[in-house]
Image 1 (tube, rainbow, N blue to C red):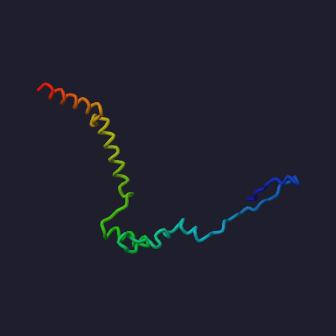
Image 2: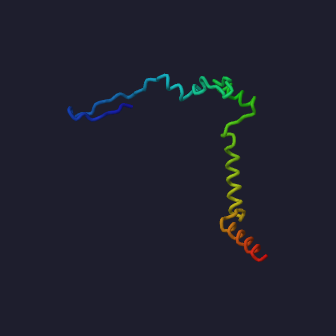
Image 3: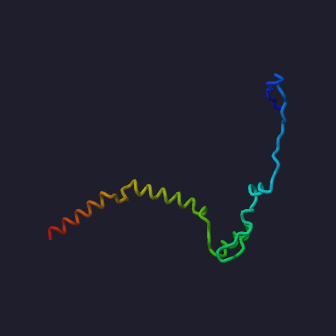
Amino acid sequence: MPRYKYDAKTKALVEITTEHKAKRTNSDRTLWNDTHYDGARTTDGKDIGSRKKHRQYMKDNNLTTSDDYTNEWKAAAKEREHYKANGGTVTKDDIRRAIHQLESQNNGK
């Protein structure tokens, strides 16, 4: 579908190009492949310069990434909220009362 713009000098509509594709560059490769692995090495010097090598290194050394725990963190957050909502928390006032009670018990002896 053609597009038009108004030309003030000629006072007419002028058709502008219908397709414009940006030239691709080498840096565009990072958008859709694993070039961020290029030259990657572990702290002990092993090459993990590809996704496959990285996965194998993680498996061999019983390691994982933080995104493996996303669901567990969500579940733990729900448990904490449930714990807090049902009186499971200790507030500063609770601590103050306990200290005051202990001090008053010790003063009486």
